[in-house]
Length: 288
Image (cartoon, rainbow, N blue to C red):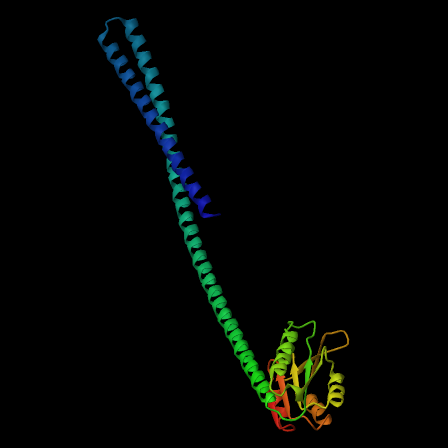
């Protein structure tokens, strides 16, 4: 039972005790009255000289005494009921105290649980904030690297083909690759040596498209933009546009099997350090 129910039990017993005590007081008043009437009748019988009057008063006194005895019996019954209600009230008070203690323990446990949930939420929030800050820092670094690469392209005195490979699988977070390609195109267009830079782009790239594009374009710079994994894989697209993981070893093999004109490979993906570290053994420079 709940604390409220236990409290109502206590109040019910208290009200019953009060009612019984009121009834007992009323009966005690009646008993006193009956005894006084009996006393008065006995006194009147002793004063009269009439035998018939004396007998009448004595019968009247006996009747009042009998009524007083009956009332005393009722008072005794009421006292028994009052004692029983006091016992029940004591039990109800003990049960109320136990219910209150249990409720307090429950509230303490719930508060501890809420504190633990708040702490877990704070830790999770801090971890998520750290991940977001890490991604922002990484992408900021990638953008600075891209700008530095484009700046170097402006100084190239010979014909240079830049191959932009973009892969944005539909089951991954969608990237603004079109904006990135436009930014590269604008930088090339504004550069001093724009006439010697040729920008080629391939979109929705599948694994087999890489070697074909390298052989067709014979680029000096390969710029891959898209998604990467923590295991240093690159996420290309399959025939239906979903993610297709390609290992860094396969990427290195494809690059080395393609044109020997590649001077710079730039990976604009998450977790691209391992990819860049692997390719640098085969090309003069890499960014990632």
